[in-house]
Amino acid sequence: MLKLCSRGLVVWSLLLVRALAAPSFPGENELQPRASTCNTATNRACWTTNFNINTDYETSTPTTGVTRTFTFTITEVNNYVGGDGVTKVKAMLVNGQFPGPTITADWGDRINVTVINQLVTNGTSIHWHGVRQLNSNNYDGTSGITECPIRPGGSRTYSFLATQYGTSWYHSHFSSQYGNGVLGPIVINGPASANYDIDLGPLSISDWYYGAVDAILWRVNNPSNPFIPGFPGSPPPSDNVLFNGKNINPKGAGGSYQKITLTPGKLHLLRLINPSVENTFTVTLVGHTFQIVATDFVPITPVTVSSLYIAVGQRYDVIINASQAVGNYWFNVSYSSGPCGLSNNPKPAAIFSYSGAPSANPTTPGTVPPDTHCADPLTYSPVVTRTAPVASFTPSAADTLNTNIQINSSIARVFWPVNGSPMNVSWNNPTLAYVKSGTTASMPRAENVVSVPNGNTLTFWLIQNNSSIPHPVHLHGHDFLVLGASPALANPIPPTNKLRPYNPATDAASLKGNNPTRRDTTVLPAWGWLVVAYTTNNPGAWLFHCHVAWHVSQGLSIQFLEQLSAIPSAVNLNDLQPNCNNWAAYFPSQDPFHQEDSGI
Image (cartoon, rainbow, N blue to C red; front, side, top):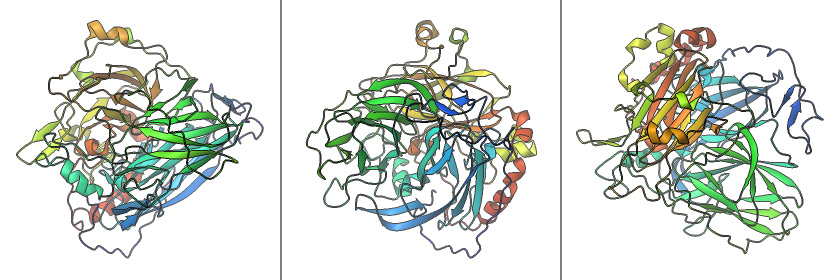
């Protein structure tokens, strides 16, 4: 069982701290300092000599010689009063705050983060969402895949090179633990595809639940007591939506609006993040547009929109032109009519205020944007181009991943299997331990291993969803090319709907192989299909999963075992054992709870 409510007292007097050797990268000791006059408000495309917006970061990355060091202490708080003034039964926080501290670095810096686990009974691990982790798969932070969890009272230091730039977030990857607050932003400074004057920093827009996430998960997993009668596995609406951890209480007194200041006449870079458990959002800023310059970590040719849909796990870097009259403007969140997130706060909002405006709430409410039907736009054009020979793609059983909801009446559980198998990892024996011992052939089927043995090969994957629920899917260790997806249904709920499988005769023509949208998170439509492709240029065990926390807990995941023969020489597998030894001394013998979900 996910142990997010303490039902016993475990006191640890020994804090286990150890220093981990950092992997080396070619040229890392060759200092290439950031040129102070290169990246300016009128030339954001530049970064340093030989590195700019047109640099392909998969083949060339500056190495500054700078190490950014952080320490994160994970604690739990009963009856935590959140940023809306309402008490949450159980919170788990990074350095006592939600969201956790922002990791800030420059492109080419090394990032070292020591994570200290002071939770009562939970293990933990921290995943750096979207970070490529080239040759550092052991620091990807995925419990049961790339490491054993960090035991209560233990610690671990993660170390990786910032080979990409842009906006992302970190979160725990131990069941659905991050839903209690173990998350925070990542900002890696680098070039941009359009000019701006002021970097406003990250704006995390997150769903927020007043209950403890394990209690919510227990009910989501129980087919006899769903939150929506007649729909086993259905989740509750979130209790609120927070903007960088703040909002008013939608049910009464408490909290306050998050306020962000704009400077009249200036261009502002805003880094949007959706680190939610389940809610997806469409955002608008009354009287203004967004100029999108990056999707996840991928810079794009700028495109201007009046509203922007953000799925769970996605990020957008946008530029806002403060060209309107000095005043206060609502930054509004709205929901799709489809089943991709609802909240007990029907109209979440923050306030953008021009410098010099009076301290008051905005007076113009704005208009509701078009319904996205939970559809992810696939019209973005990356600055650094890629192509895929889509005409040669013919799906087979080997590259097709099917998912559907499954009710197991014998144990009263809801699952989301992939190709008939819901993922279930072993915390004590992660995939990289199998790699180290040369025993991957004996891994249980429930580990959902998909072997991709060849290096530098473009691999195609068809994912099909035989259900009424769309899924935001995320790939670790890679950006993928989003080659196409079936159109979103306006109403996927009625039982008359059925799977619209990929049909090469009619659907192949809709695939885009010439510089398609590229990112690390996209949406698998309800009753539909999605085709993605990525190049096998990063040896390791990489999770590919739905980023709805309830669904990944219920098994909607696979792991790509990429270039198995190359992993031992590329990745420091000796790093595994000390942390795994510490975890094995705790779990299961000293842990009062058992693993009752996928573990990730």
